[in-house]
Image 1 (cartoon, rainbow, N blue to C red):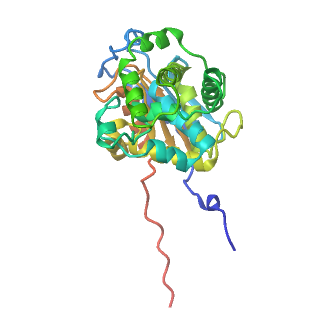
Image 2 (image 1 turned 90 degrees about the horizontal axis):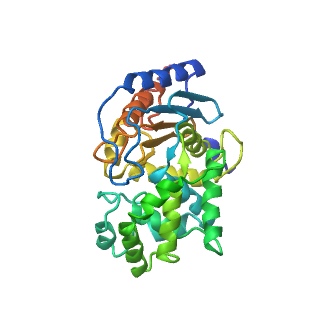
Image 3 (image 1 turned 120 degrees about the horizontal axis):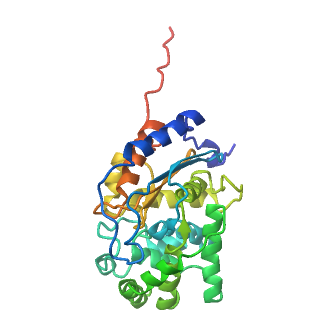
Length: 333
């Protein structure tokens, strides 16, 4: 008798509502005054972000929500969009096609590096760094520029459970600083690793990064990946369970750039950060955490968000590598 592999997925469950709510509030209180990190200065429209804002949200796969602090403050999603566009493209064209074009291995170099492309004969290797993300966005389907942008916007909105919109000021600011991404796109095209016109693909990629979200949105989006692709708020099946598995496996190994190994060691759950100060962290079968705080560490991740997430992962059992000894069977004679 055959069985569906999904019947045998077991990841435990989160503690009770009160326990989780208290833990979220405590994580906010414990780190709200932390003064470490610096607001990014490379993008003028992001440089004036309020360093004191800090929001934490956790959403269960059943839709239960917990928020603390500035969880409703909106900021641009930036690189966190890479994870969800990757999922949408995998859903549309399939696991093998995306793997062949983009790859899944950690490059071990900064997110905007050219070296990883040249060292791998034009293969971008990692969908969570800029080159791989641009190659992924190049695979977005559509007969026109508007169709392709519509696919991205509607897909990310389904993940968030509401209609998202672009921060036009940030989009304009980042477009003026896009020479490096355009260079990556042309390099990919030269190696036959980019579908579409480089300028158009980079424009779409920049727009997706400029979508406005808040910490709660990130938690809802992450909880959709944690719950087999079903948005816990709307009940909409955004992507298939197998696509969630593919996306989370990539995030586990590459989502926090060259610090991904350190993140897994300290937190133990797939995650993605963005230079605006957002982090989404996913515990399969349980839920997801979204955090926002603009000051970043030297790897480009929110300092408060990293510390709060690490604490919540330990307190709530979100670490996918943690286990406890099973009861021993009593011996009989």
